Length: 317
Image (cartoon, rainbow, N blue to C red; front, side):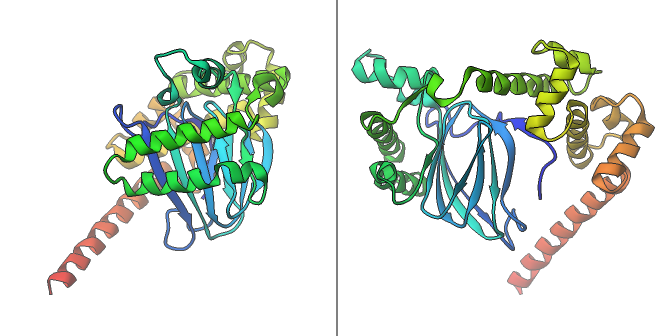
């Protein structure tokens, strides 16, 4: 199911010693995405390489739209604003995320100075989409497939071998003349629009428990409230205030599900000064009252535990 908000991803991928993570996402009946795969608009520091194993996806990358099909490869540069939607119920894709800092060298050689340094500092960008059957795709396909397998298996020396493959992928893209300087990827106006959006979202996420006015949000850019509402809705599809309400309600859902706080405490923690208004908006958007939501989630958890226990008993028999 779709989430109501976007976010700046703060998840730590991998470890400090091995900052590379491999993931696989499957959508369809019996998976975590029974209807279709969906990841709402967000961004992160990590570089992300995706390989489409099955199905088709809509990618929005820095406000540009792409369709990726089976066999296609996508590279999301550090800081790219992106959203992914599966176009059908059954899809499957592999992902490798890594901290771009693992590419750097202490010795300032030509590759460090002309490729890796500018890439890590967002002065150069790798292309986002590599369609199957193109020469650009052929350049990196073999390495990407090997990378996905090595990170998945995690056999001896997997991290070292993965890092070498990532460096080879970057080198192949660079030597093919496919690295793009910042000005060639986006216009100044587009970069500014995305940065403004990120600034507003970041302010909401850090201050959602406090009183926030439209002017507070406008001051983060800064701009007037009319411009804020216009550009924000153009990206998010909702007004800044509606986005803030959705953000607060999603945080409220988490607290109701994972803590023993009362409805009043949750409302206040999430920035609602009036509990009646909180209950009304919660019911309007979530389809039930906060109390009913809490009860449903707890009953669902109990049913899952009961089912698990029953399965264990059957196995013993």
